[in-house]
Image (cartoon, rainbow, N blue to C red):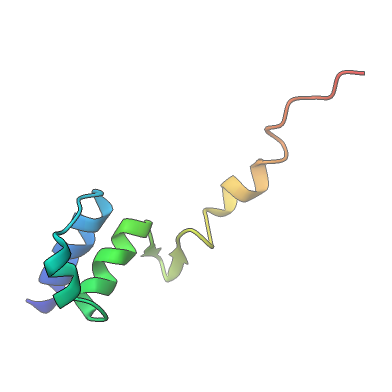
Length: 73
């Protein structure tokens, strides 16, 4: 039951919906706040590996250099 509620707050944050200020003040520094903020920031875990803003997909970081246009000389 608790995980279901936290998952709903995660999805609410992931969809980019804003919560009222009064609710955010009540939920500050709680598990609800952390779940919503993780969703809002786009953080998730897959197969035991955490992805997010500081650890993007490995393929994106490696292929960024290869995607650059060739230099014209």
